[in-house]
Length: 212
Image (cartoon, rainbow, N blue to C red; front, side, top):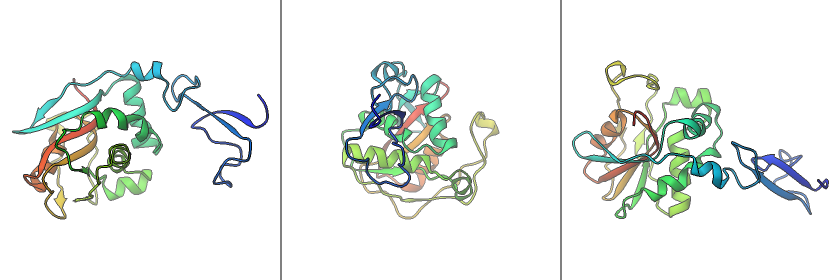
């Protein structure tokens, strides 16, 4: 390859930490984060390997539509976002989430990560996913849920081993609000969020669904 070309996953160029734009003549060839083939953050072949998740009802009336089943590559992408702080992964998941939004949706409300976990890892996955979906759809993102100081990890735990979810709304959601989360398992977090946000919530979307 010529010196002005670079095949790098994520499309970063030499000196990207110092330059806000690529140098003149630079050609950025994006590599798939999974197979390292040229073709964007996730190539079409790898994207087709993601398994679509069915909609489910949680609580008494909240319909949750997850983009993908929480397994394989989809699970890895979510893990990269949640635990490695790779915020660019949100853009890979956002199209599938945007496609699942109810047609009546008027705004997005992300599930916040606890303050302690956000300080530890440096990223709020629900917020990053909400921002990515907002950029795709033009829907406003309203941070109506106050982040708790601490919340015990629920990953890999069944309903009977999970601590109660405690969320507080800064104000009720406007009609047409859709809750945004990274992973839905039992639906306890989304149910708690809908309860404190009020009747304006019309549904929820998540990146992946576990246990399907």
